[in-house]
Image (cartoon, rainbow, N blue to C red; front, side):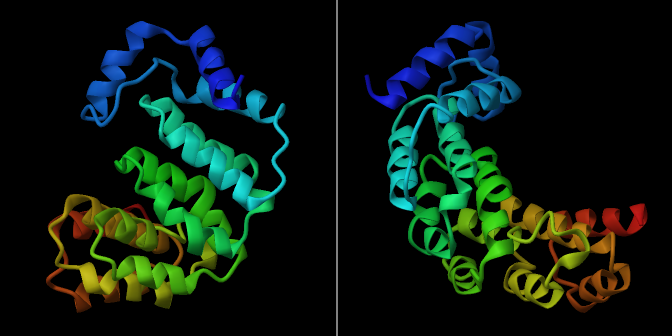
Length: 223
């Protein structure tokens, strides 16, 4: 039995089918759901991963790609869970060579942000992935732009603030909601530690979208 089929059996054993329709509706029907909520999914995937023996980044990519081909959304999440579990096998080349392809498999904010928080951001924090982030930022794809702007989230006071500001700047007037929200959240995170710099950025960009401005100023108010 293929490993993915084993995971399907594990999901089926714990799924609540009555959850499937509401979960799909919440995600705007980007994909059907099995009916397994996030915490339970993570536990199931971790147990499943512990039975596997992946040896390389190529193995991780291959399995994640196979999971992304499954119709249900939990498998798309599991692809990111697998990469996070086997993150010690990954380095900057995984970001450069594979991350965008995986990120853009049935993309929506839920999967894009999961790849960001659990895989892309930790790898970018450990390795120099700046070239790839700049490529994504200039790609014209809203999901890659979002991921690039958010790639330092979680660093607390250790942001490369100049780089974050520079990644935000080309998109400050973008009315695309998911890009604007990413800018606002990135600025809000920095505002916790460097409020004066965020205020300077906001003041220097009067064309900043309403969504981004609101989120950034919320961070300043909380500060």
